[in-house]
Image 1: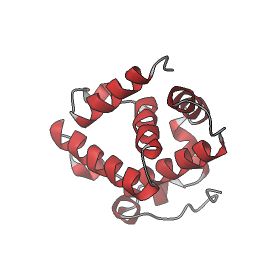
Image 2: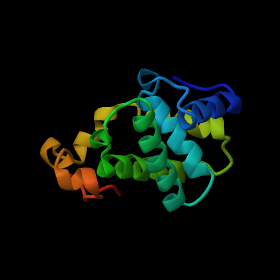
Image 3: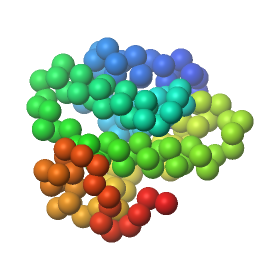
Image 4: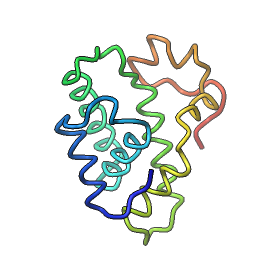
Length: 138
């Protein structure tokens, strides 16, 4: 998945925020897209809170239990995306940044290079941020 225009990105964000996207229309690459949008618009804490709130709204709207939400997983991806953005040229467009983030972080299983499945699926990790047990996010 890649984007050609900012309006394509805005459509994904709007679809997520208004829950127009069906749950199966919100794969990993679109999660990354929304996260880049939020991170490009402000501070990390605000972006993370928007993502968390949006994910709860999306889950609620589509009748998916909130137990599906994982705070550690969400925080991990937001941190990793933020790290990738910080490493990019500052003069890149939102479209270029989004496409590069998707390209670099396309593998949703990348999280298992940082976490064991047991820790990631623990009740503690679902409720609050837990540091990785395999490798630090540098």
